[in-house]
Structures are given as structure tokens and as C-alpha cells.
Length: 358
Picture 1 (cartoon, one colour):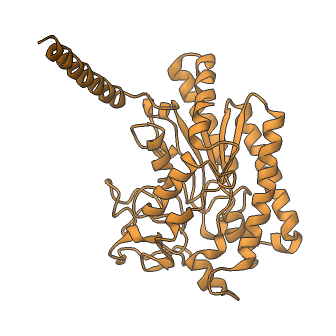
Picture 2 (cartoon, rainbow, N blue to C red; picture 1 turned 45 degrees about the horizontal axis):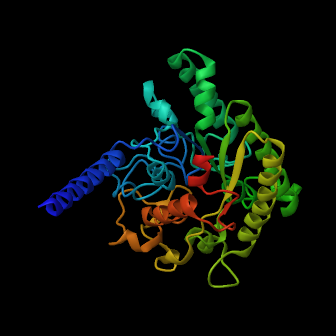
Picture 3 (cartoon, rainbow, N blue to C red; picture 1 turned 30 degrees about the horizontal axis):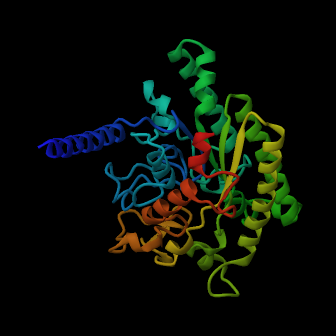
């Protein structure tokens, strides 16, 4: 009889532990209080919707797999930062700067703008966008609003030090600047190596401005293989079947300098942590259809989906949603890599999860 009672006690204790575990998971606090996003169309979630530009996607088939439909995300569903925010435990989607209001800014704000770049003039061939310097000014506006809501700057400063600042930008400084000589003269003034140096020098100043305004945790992304997009291949042609080499070489020059910058910033600003991220997709990428857009392209500057056009039957098997931007399926893959990767080629010195705990 005594043995049966002990067994029952063990069962009850086990059940209570399971319930407690489930309760803790349900009420788990986010790993960081807020997540701020700076960047271009890979990150934009609606800031371009009301701008006079060809670089906006607030129409179907964009958003066909997003609960709210077309929102301004350059994707069929969620972008990478939606997934990262979710992995960090933030319950709600990070609001676009143009729609942010009230207390929803405490979880962070997305300032990204399609076609935007590090340089002010980048993307102007498509219309008006919000370059990185302007995005940083918009962030200062949000800081002022947070300070008013919290009552004092010290509390705001304490909050900002715990937040992750994501900066994913630079692609357009090549595809909508340097390699568009009909609109810009940068390629006539600078050799590729010099141009990459100038971009990273300017980005360094921009990151330091964020640091001077309270940021301490930085996730900075390298430029992907911009010569391997369907639009780049159709636009420039290639000597090989896969990619446009001059675009990828430009991205590599930029990335090599950016990695050095991240190392220097960590050495010089020891009360902050900067990490370089390049989530390439790994073996999961090989399972997806590459170099073929899921929708019928021709919108925007030629790389976006045509309004109300049909899309492929199963976007979860494709790398590209349109001529340039990834599908929700790929965004989910690269978000997980950025969050968990132990490879120094993909996350150095920290992944997002480690950065959150720093």
C-alpha cells in the first residue's frame, strides 16, 4: 500500500512539473524587450506604401499568405524579421514606422524602406524612398516618444540598451546605384574596391550614430548573392548559367570590409556588441527551386510581381517570390540560421540568440 502511495505521489509531481513547464512557456518573457529594424525591401513592412515610388508592393499577389493580406512586405507572407521577432518571443509583429503609434512602439519599430541604401541618392531611379540616414532620424523621433511615455530619459536609455538593432542594407547601393550607370555616376568615379570602402565607411558613421543614441546590441547583415536573382540574370545575362559575377564580386568586396568593421567596432566600443550575419540558407536552400520567380514579374522597375498576377501553386518550394525577393519559406530558413547558427561564416561573433543574452 505504501509503495502504491509513493508511486501516486511521483505521478502527481510529474504532472505538476509538466503543467508548470507549460505555464512558464505560455507566460515566457521575450528575450529582448524590443527589436528595431533598419534596411531596404528585404525588411520593409509597409513604410513605402504611400510614397511616390515604383518600389512598393501593397497589392496582390503580395501578401497572399499573410493573415492581413498585402501590407507592403515584399513577399508572399512574412519577411525574415517577422520570424526573428517571433523567435525572440515578441508576440506582436513589429509595426512599420508610418503606422506606429501609442505604446506599440515599446516592442520596437521597423524603419526599412524598399529601394533604400546607405547612400542618400540610392533608389531614386524608382522614386522616393527613405535612405538609412533618414531612417535613423525617424528612430530619434521614436526615442523622443518613448521618453515622453516613460517619463524620463534614463528609463528610455536603459530600455534601448537591451534592444536588438537590426541593420540589413547595401544591396541597392549596387543594384539601384553603382550598376545603373544610366542613372548614377558612381561607377565612373569609383572602382569597385574604392566604392565598397566608401559604403562601409559611411555605414560605420551611421552605426555609431545609433550607438550615440543608446543602441548597444547590433545585428548587421552582409549583402547576399545579388547576382543570382532571376531579375539580375535576365537583366545582365551571365557567362555562366547561374549568376552575374560582377554583382556578386561587388557584394563580396562590401562584405569583406563589413566584417573588418564589425571587428573594429567591437574592439573600440566595448560596452556594445556588434555581430556580422550572413545566413545563406545552407542545405535547406538546395531543397527549393532557385532562379525562378514564383509570380509573374514586370512590375516596379521590372523585378516586382505584376499587380493581381497569378503565382505558382506552391510557394513553399521556391527561393524567389518575385525577381529579387525571397519567399516566406526562405525567410523562415534564413531567420532560423541567423538566430541559431554556430558557423562563423554565418554569424560572427554571435548569433541572434546569443546577442539577445549578451
